[in-house]
Image 1 (cartoon, rainbow, N blue to C red):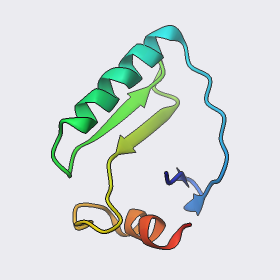
Image 2 (tube, rainbow, N blue to C red):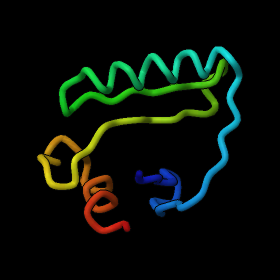
Image 3 (cartoon, one colour):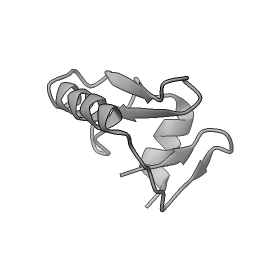
Image 4 (tube, rainbow, N blue to C red):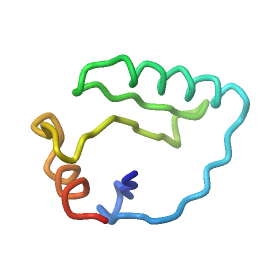
Length: 80
């Protein structure tokens, strides 16, 4: 698991996320889609007013990373 603070471009080790029921339903749907998607798919889960967002994607550290932006490649390859 890799967690990036997109504002600071810093890796995070611990976060707490509190969901409303409808957000959990959306999250489960997006995760199921990720499991069945191509490698370059990603999804955005937003709150009702779009002021908060979670972006999710699958990665394989030993696989192809060409579809990821450089900051994500760095996070995947260098953050342990």
